[in-house]
Length: 301
Image 1 (cartoon, one colour):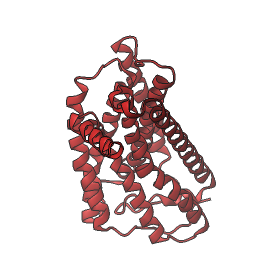
Image 2 (cartoon, rainbow, N blue to C red):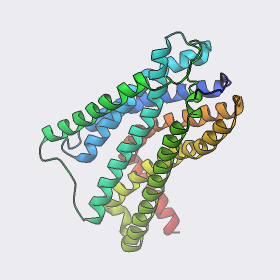
Image 3 (cartoon, rainbow, N blue to C red):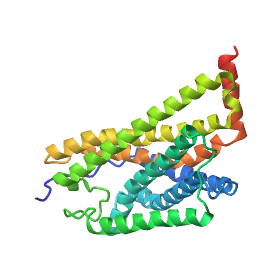
Image 4 (cartoon, rainbow, N blue to C red):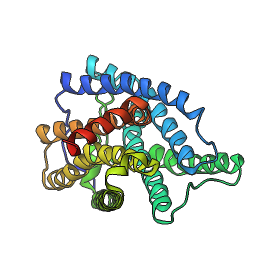
């Protein structure tokens, strides 16, 4: 049956505008910064390939942010409903693809740690290109038809108001899919956190004061950046999503407060674009020296 939720337009405030504005600026700076670093990285490395794809994901998403900002400022969508669906879906696609590439990077580094390998890499550069091309082809083949045919297609929406596709959640199978996605993401995030804590504690017990002289420690420290982004940017949205899905399912009318908070949590996922800046910072000599100084201060005084 069709959803009976009334039209719901979250309150548009400077908060959302500020978040997306910061994401656009920080994301662009991060993309530009990481390009200089990628030139020096091993192009056959699986980690490097994942980072390159991460740059592509962020770049494509950042292209849609100005349209969001325009809508937030003008409070009217003027680019047509099909493009609204694309921009709306892109925020979700960005979140889950970013999470996927984080997962790849972290799993590779965990394999390196547990199997005592120096690195995991493709046999040839062409294989890295083929793997990336295959992944993006899969995304295009699956996601584009889904967005075009299914996303925002279960009800009638106002063309002047964008990003209000909550009516889809009135359908039981849509909620089930969302619940499954939430459960999988939360479970994987917690598993990654447990693994990372175990690895860090193992290294601390084994190496102790010589910890900072080992390259593997710095690699694992970078992992904490990715774990931190997942916990700060992605996990709050997924946890709130459970409540949001439950509330929307029970309510016949729109709850503007719930819709607004959902938009806030969703916008926070876009802050993950700052990860490239953190990645660059984590590889800098200045950052390492600050960590060493802090370590010496804590354990040598």
